[in-house]
Image 1: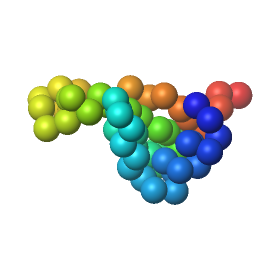
Image 2: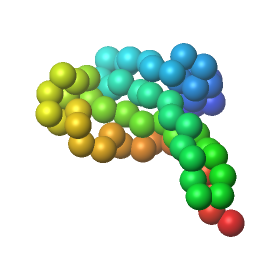
Image 3: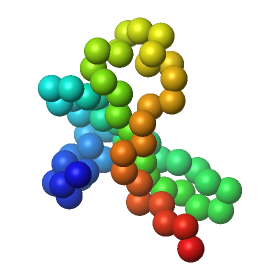
Length: 64
């Protein structure tokens, strides 16, 4: 993913492309907070498939 697109998703919260919906989430881990970007095919919106976990495609979380 390009840095510009990552920044756009984080800034706007939700971004739709031709194939996917991307969303930004702040995750509260046991000892830190980090950001994830998740996606779901647009065809799956408003279906039961949207209830399954979305694919995580980017995170700023690092395991030390």
